[in-house]
Amino acid sequence: MGFLDKILGKKEASIQSNTDFWNWFLKNEKEFFAIVKNRQNIHQGFFEKLAPKLDEIHNGIYFLTGMLDDNTVELILTPDGAVRNIYAIEELVNAAPQIKGWKITALKPASDIQDIGIDYEGFKFNKDNLKFYPNIHDGYPDEIDLTVIYDDFVEEKKQVITNGVYIFLDNYLGELHSVTLIDNMKIDGPNSISEELIPIEKLKDYLIWREKEFVEKYEGTRHNTENDNYSGFEATAKDGSGIIGLMNTDLLQWDKKASHPWVFIITILFDGSNNNGMPDKETYELLNEIEDEVVVDLKDLEGYLNVGRETLANRREIFFACKDFRKPTKVADELIKKHAGSFEISYEIYKDKYWQTFRHYEPR
Image 1 (cartoon, rainbow, N blue to C red):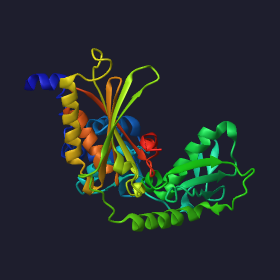
Image 2: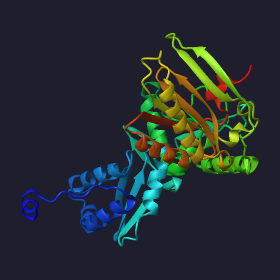
Image 3: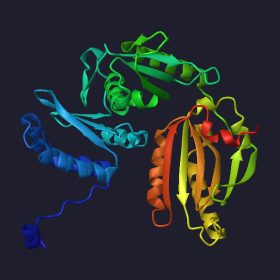
Image 4: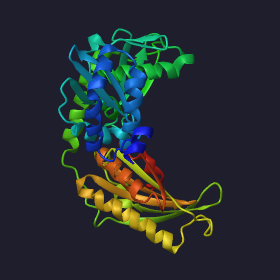
């Protein structure tokens, strides 16, 4: 075997844990340091080696690197705006050892607005050509809904400009605040704007104030679902297939929905071809066991409310409203791995402070 290793090259062990990753990184860090510092062969010598190792830890981890000073390389790990990948990056960075000459950072940090100038696909974004105003909704007082005004806005290039604004905000606010504090945002030009415009450098203070106000308003808010009432629902989809739902009606009428602003939906696919798209008895029991697993991990008094479930056309959807996004995404990733041989499981998580996702279940 040793002779074959010399001929074929010894295959690197796969990365199974954060510790495995950092052990691998430590073996290569001096070479990586020299590559970044000298700016030579950086793609092939560093990026193409690092990327697949990060993929082995968790899909969707991206990175930025450069010299922080003459003797320090900064490596920033980023989910590129995907909330579902933040916990994995934070855990990976928290597990990093002290490495001389390296600064390892989770998520893009905030920068001084005076130092930010983004040049993106021919458009420049800076503190002088960006302004904003908040959109206030009487029925949704906790919603942070913004319109950002870009002086050089061109309707035909709206998507490019939108991307450029988001890159600017990532750098200005820091990636975590950029993707978690703003509920809705629209990008527009200065024409026909009657609202008073606020300089973009005031945005950080505005968001900090709104977040502080929000936290104080709902601090300590919890809901015990043990004695809640549930109602069953039946409907027919457009294709004629059946829909069966079971929803916590007490939660749907709760007046503190915004205290749990993250909607988390787990989708489990199953084969219902022999039962008009519905699960047979054995599958139904397995689906309920999986839901029970999730409920054990995501407890109501810890800030994770099981709003209900819906079964339709070969899939079961389980609904939660959560105070935080980190634990649900970790639980879902572990669930997907555990049941990979039996079910195809996916999930989504997004901000919905007023649970508009479940509006059609509320009594009218």
